[in-house]
Length: 269
Ligand code: HEC
Ligand code: HEC
Ligand code: HEC
Ligand code: HEC
Ligand code: HEC
Ligand code: HEC
Ligand code: HEC
Image (cartoon, rainbow, N blue to C red):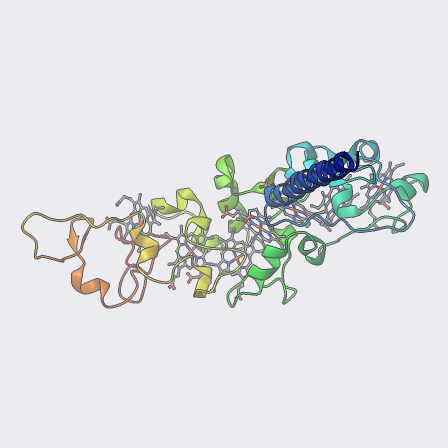
């Protein structure tokens, strides 16, 4: 009898241990799948989540294209341990009191306005990037996330897939010279400005992904030339052996018109 009871406790302990391991791995796994993003919506004392559909009748403009954004699918665990879709409320906080009050401006709802803090709440990795030495001037208060990302619409994910054209157009608002028309354009721009620039921040000047010739050699491979000297570097049918030791491809005297040129097909000036 006694032995049996001990065995049963052991069995129970094993079951509990197995259960804990499974629960823990599910927990770890679910954190890993949301990918560097810690989901922490703002709090509003006494308010509950009501869901994005509740907001729609009063806020048509913000709701119209919202379905296609990743934020429309953001979930958090509810008190019963299930996952609750928070959508609009992921940035604005739980909306029940705001709805009951008929939406009186400034009451019972968070307006993140244009401050990036609301976004950093969840996107910690972006905060780190904006702290790198070369970054768009957000901390300095000269622009915000909302200049490039529309939280309510399609260009929230502006650089993925079909949205490349959209990215360049977005950058063009402020960088017409680089993104505008050129007689001799550099086809690299068709892959998007982000092929060469880390726009949230970088350790390299001009927010470049790499600070030297490697930035270019990803696409301009060195082709060995028949009869050329050993170890010579040939790019685009032209011997670059001596040139590459003089600096980056885009330094003075070389391809300085890297985004495109109106006079020189080799993007020299
Ligand atoms: C990713 C975060 C985020 C999500 C999700 C989000 N919003 Fe917003 N919302 C913002 C930000 C940031 C602003 C301030 C924008 C600005 O000032 O240009 C804002 C502003 C607003 C405003 C005020 C507009 C004004 O003209 O003052 C309303 C209303 C609004 N959002 C409703 C919604 C609704 C409804 C949804 C869901 C369909 C939603 N938001 C989802 C971030 C978000
Ligand atoms: C019954 C209609 C109604 C519903 C439902 C409603 N709102 Fe509002 N909301 C309003 C009104 C009215 C305003 C004030 C607009 C103004 O003054 O231009 C407002 C303002 C806002 C603002 C701007 C607040 C500020 O201080 O600038 C945000 C953000 C907002 N609503 C988000 C939401 C979200 C998110 C939901 C859904 C959870 C929601 N609203 C549901 C009517 C509503
Ligand atoms: C409550 C947490 C939360 C807040 C606040 C938040 N986000 Fe997000 N955001 C997420 C999650 C979760 C994802 C989805 C991540 C994934 O799928 O990898 C996401 C995805 C994104 C994406 C990628 C979109 C895509 O489709 O690839 C962008 C861009 C983005 N957020 C910008 C913002 C901006 C700008 C703000 C502030 C206005 C903001 N976020 C506020 C949680 C949040
Ligand atoms: C100068 C324009 C610009 C600003 C400002 C900006 N972003 Fe982005 N963001 C982009 C572009 C372009 C991409 C696509 C990047 C790519 O494909 O390499 C992107 C992608 C993202 C993504 C999804 C892909 C990823 O890298 O995880 C998130 C999340 C994001 N941004 C959040 C933010 C937040 C939060 C802010 C403000 C703190 C912000 N961004 C400010 C242009 C900008
Ligand atoms: C709302 C305006 C705005 C948008 C949109 C914008 N930028 Fe910028 N960008 C700036 C400002 C402001 C600076 C800082 C310029 C300065 O400090 O003189 C800057 C700086 C830069 C720099 C570094 C310039 C230097 O001389 O060091 C690069 C590269 C750049 N942006 C690329 C981009 C790309 C790529 C995009 C599109 C994803 C983009 N920007 C979108 C405003 C913008
Ligand atoms: C093929 C890589 C590449 C692509 C694609 C690219 N850039 Fe650049 N960009 C550079 C390099 C290299 C520099 C640095 C030039 C220098 O240091 O003289 C630069 C510099 C800049 C600067 C700083 C001003 C200057 O000329 O020094 C801005 C602004 C800029 N780029 C914006 C953009 C925008 C906007 C796009 C998309 C339309 C874009 N870039 C696409 C490589 C690229
Ligand atoms: C995303 C790929 C890509 C990247 C990265 C890239 N290029 Fe290009 N570049 C191209 C393509 C495609 C062409 C047109 C085909 C060709 O001439 O090889 C081109 C053409 C050129 C040309 C004109 C060729 C000629 O006839 O003289 C020059 C110069 C050039 N690139 C320089 C650079 C430099 C410098 C860098 C680095 C800052 C760079 N490229 C990065 C794709 C790229």
